[in-house]
Image (cartoon, rainbow, N blue to C red; front, side, top):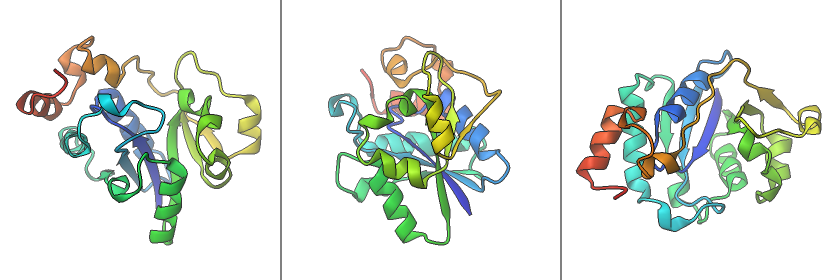
Length: 191
């Protein structure tokens, strides 16, 4: 199976995340997409993150709300790994644990444009097919496309939505799956 890994804090998951997951999981040759909930991204402040269990629960319910459960799964593999979470370690672990699968990943051009800040970024680029989601205002060096297996996703809808805006209530609640909004309200998150 070709499993595409979609790493993120998902703090909280919103409809742009879900639309990207839907698009990538529909690509010919992709068998499954795993949303890898990262407990602590080393490039983000831990203080703004709600507990990973809340983020995992919201992602799981949102996948169901959007009818993606047959193609998308939420993955908690990083919950038991050392923190902060380093992508290369997770990829290595998954390859060792599931040698019968091929792992690739989806990444926004904002992240790829700063990939050299990532620990062991060369391992990721040399071993992993990257499905590149374009983000407005972020250019990726041309040589990356020539040197590595990067597949630019053309014709996909571009979203101007971030979890930061959701937490700050700068966007309408309709940008969240109904279960995510209800979960946030019931658990008094992001106040």
